[in-house]
Image 1 (cartoon, rainbow, N blue to C red):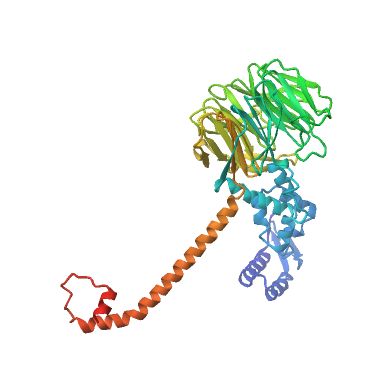
Image 2: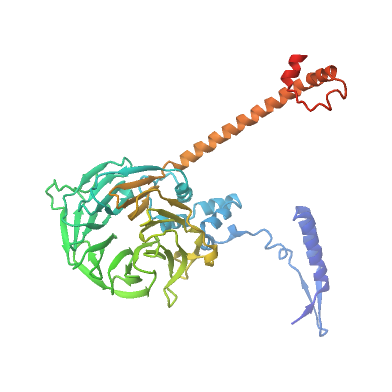
Length: 536
């Protein structure tokens, strides 16, 4: 039913004008509430009249409400839908929102989805999750700063694989000399080396409980952690504690290895990926491919692998093939990496290109290509990812550092699980690699990133560590020195101007007394002030 409420319209217009001019001052509110008490005779178009009195509190019932008046559970759900940048903006609105947004549990999710749980060295009970996140996000800029290079000598032949165990500050390397070596990450010193294992070691993986190495003879050589040992593993085999054993089932060279909490993953040139139970040491799943398996990376109950020029995603519990993309690269697809959330896959191949794919569970085509870079003139042999940096190692002897954070956005699935999604952009908006590290020998076979360091091994037989741990401190000192130099320069300039102002009057008087008005105007000779003073 339609009503014509002329008096009510006038009242509301008056209220709007008062509120706009007085910005809801107390006097205007009192006057407006007095106006709102008028009886409003509303005449219907059909001639039926009806009178209704406007309640005094209805007009301003919603004026003073804000988001903090909502139930805490609803506020929490609203903040869950924001990304870190938006959440930071919300925390700057008011003191109340700052407290709510800063202490929100979503900061822990932000941190863990990008870098996992922090180590004991990084974690502090005195810091909130927001402070930890901001600090780690700030430190991610270190790879754009200055670095130092440590060169580790010890291998007698080419280094085929490197692995950085940042939580224990250890580096493991192996190669054609069939020896696995363990290095101190911070000091760059050799800690221990294994006996020769009898064949080339192409893959190494480790955590704080187990170290595995894969050989071209088809075995997986394993070392269990030794309790009480400072460097976790006894590679020399001095302690007789049955901590060293081998797994045999592959019929070809082992090319890739990976670990999670309950499984061991191994890929081989026998065209299979095998999944092993860590407690029983039995093979529980065989994933068969149509070509040599070059690389693999697991996440949760799935594992992504490269075989020939193709990329596959498998479900490890049932052995089901979830998705496959054929002819990803021109030639072999040598390398694969994955984000910590498992939503993004990066591949590198023989054509020198690096591709980025997103895994979309709702789509029929589960792997969707997002971006492509071609930073190398040779084959890409290895990839490593730590948010937001993707590092590639190539046969051209160069390392490419690619920042992928601008391609990502925070989103929410219907189940409430936080995932990383892709911004809608075309290939023209994709930025090139932010940095290239080069100047060394060709054929870089392996690379790893972590703890503000990049570790690489290649055909030279040496291991190089690009150490960026002091990059931010060096940049801060450089900025401080630049500020001091600028301040001193400005101080000298002010003093010079003051001296010129003081000495300028006497100089002008001396010159005027010495020369007539137009005496030297036609003579194009420039006299310095010092020469003028000496003549005077």
